[in-house]
Amino acid sequence: MKPLFRFLAVGALLTCSQLASAFEGKIGLAMTDPRGNTMNMDYAMKDQKIRMDMNGRGHQAAMIMDVAKKEMIMLMPDQGMYMVMPMKQTIDKAMEQAGASTADVEVTGKTETILGYKCSQILVKDKGNVTEAWVAEGLGNFMGMSGGGGGPFGGGRSAPAAKWEEVIKGKGGFPLRVITRDAAGKQLSKMEATKIEPGSLPDSLFAPPAGFQKFDMPNMGGMFK
Image (cartoon, rainbow, N blue to C red; front, side):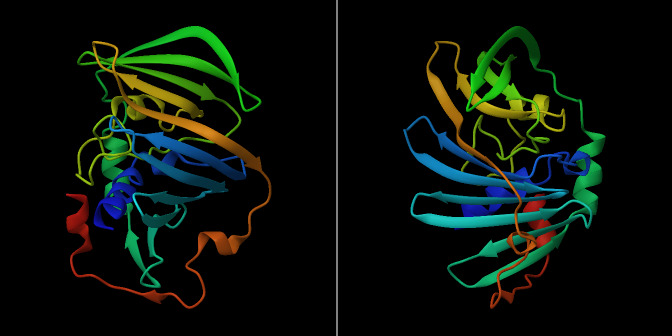
């Protein structure tokens, strides 16, 4: 379970203080790594709260982030436990580094409709890799999800976010399809929306389930270094 939780934790730090989603509902995402492994995620948004539920490689994990409280909750369904982590320092650091990306970004002007939403194409070029991202408006702000490695399967390492995330996060759009290829055109990773379900979500979805016990781990800040 550690890689999944670290993966969630790192993604949660990305410009989350800019998040104020006018969209309420869930977006289903399917993510594929170079080996063909697939991870499915439900990305739920309501006001200034986000919940990510992931299912992949035989494991389940979930993270809830409350931007207003600058707090992150990691759920451990298998153990019936949860951890609460303050995020003020990590948020402030992320904001200081915002806009520091050196990737070459091209807005092509091309558009495509994905799941009923008009998307604009953005190309992000960095160190030979080219990422093709199709970004939709009206679905809230994207806050990121990977810990590096060009996609959502970073192996749990606390590496920088993928360049395409640095470009898109907090800009007022949500990527519904993202494909990263190397210089030879080989696909390295893919993320694609499988469903979009607008609608009212219960407040209970963004809180630890009843019966879960709180777990405190000493020096939790070490996870983010």
